[in-house]
Amino acid sequence: MVERLKCIALVGAGAFLGSVSSIFLLKLLPRRFTNRLLKRPIEINGPKGCFIAQAESHGLDSPELMTDEIASEQLTRNIQFFGLESQQKVCKSYVVIIGLGGVGSHAACMLLRSGVGRLLLVDFDQVSLSSLNRHAVATREDVGIPKAQCLKKHFLSIFPECQIDAKVLLYDASSEEEILSGHPNFVLDCIDNIDTKVSLLAACVRRGLKVLSATGAGARADPTRIRVADLRESTNDPLSRAVRYRLRKDYGIEGGIPVVFSLEKPKVKLLPFKGPSGEEDNPSDYQIVPGFRVRIIPVLGTIPAIFGQVMASYVVTQLAGFQVQTEPVVNLDMEHYQKLHRRLIEHEEMLYGTALEVQVDVGEVMYVVKELWHGRSARDQSTKDVGRAMWRSVNDLMLVRFAGLCKFAPKLRSLF
Image (tube, helix red, strand yellow):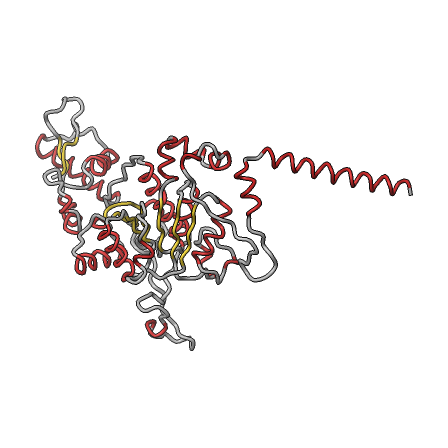
């Protein structure tokens, strides 16, 4: 009996000490964080995504950045990279992301982790089992949930200071005002439907909104060939080509829209569409939403994820006012650089009888072509010449030595 009383006393004492220590720790935490802990959603057994309490989302007010210990610690590396003033610009920003699949979900996730103060997440579709190979945060429990709501649910546990709005909407003319109003600092176009994409980009140009567009990320495998450039400079991408044509034809827009694209040619094609009988059928007969693709394009999940990361990095640096010089788009392979190097040697031998004065190798030729002249002729660097005609003529260009430089180290002067 005595032993039993001792056990009860020890358990009681442990419970008391635990309660006292919990109260003491809560008092040490910032009041704002304590309130956030108390407001955190409580999950119950039942349907997927069901909560009995929903956490509130508040945009991070930039003066509170250093006074909120939790938020400032979470953003420490960004503050160290950009500086406090630039990071405050990011925290005061409002970004709209339309299309929350493999590209959009990763872009939105990194914008959130970078401290963007307000996000609007827009997508009409639901999480599917087959999309889990490329989605940023979705799990099997999220299958069947609208993508916008799925992201919001996960985002609130990552950076609850962000004001997150989720709209289960299809972008079109009728929803333009609802989605694009509010003066967003940036709009991310992560849509893979041509009609919707063209309509959104035209609306952003008309409203004077900054927009970054993602082109085709499917059917590709080489992450080193992903670039950011003007829509006019994107190559090897059927989606970019169709969007360029439609913007020029329907809206008179020639360019001026930055896009993320891949220089890599698609490795695989759209899969044939098979109906319920297993026979090939007409895909348009099965469209739930008119104009949206029904046939499946194979996707290596890493590539759309990298597309989204590139988009987030581009937008965050722009919001912070941090200057980044993107790599020029010069769609040449090593064979082209070797050819230019051979032509230089042949030109020297023809003029001087020897090529001993050519003290450059293929790597230096590559540097001159890409970094100095951006793949364009030194005679005319006008951006209006960027396009298919320029790439056809690049094989006729030739590097020559500028004779005015010092004798022992003649360099490459120009592209003709």
